[in-house]
Amino acid sequence: MNATQNQIMENLQSIQQAADNLYQFLNQEHQCLVARNYKELVELTTAKEQAVIKLEGLEQQRNQILAGRTMESMLADQPQGLQAWQNTLRLIGDCEHQNRVNGQLIERSQQLTRETLHLMSGVQPASETTYGPDGLKHGETSLLGKTQA
Image 1 (cartoon, rainbow, N blue to C red):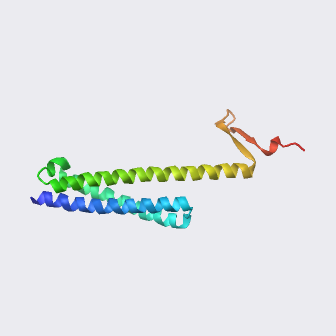
Image 2 (image 1 turned 60 degrees about the vertical axis):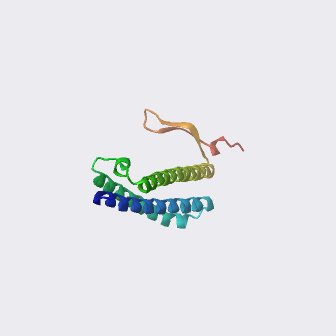
Image 3 (image 1 turned 30 degrees about the vertical axis):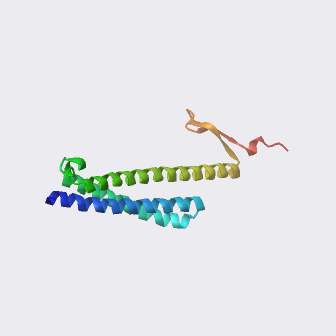
C-alpha cells in the first residue's frame, strides 16, 4: 500500500465514523420527533449540523487526496478497502433515507400545527391563497363569519 492509499484509507475510516455518528443523531432525532421531545430535538439539531459539516470537510479532503481518480481505481488492489467504501456508501444512503423520514415527520407536525392554529383563529385557508391586484391576500375565509345566531 502506497502513501496515497494510506491517506485515503485513513480518510475513509474518518468518513465511516462521521457517517455513523450522523446516523446515530438521525435515529435519536427520529425518536425525539415521535415522542415530541422538542427540547432534546433542539440540542440534537446542533449536533447533527456539526456532523454534516464534519462529513463535508472529510469529503473535500477525500477529493483532494483522489486528485481526480475514483475510489474504485485507488483501492483496486485493496479488497478490504473497496468493501469499506461500499459499506460507507450504504451507510450514507441510510443517513439520507432517515433524514427524509425525519423531514416528513417534521412536515406532518407543522401541518398539524397550522391546522390547529387555523381552527383556533377561525380562519379557514382555501385550497389556493392568491394575491389580488390590490395586493391583498384572497382565498381565506373566516370560520366565524359563517356562524349564525
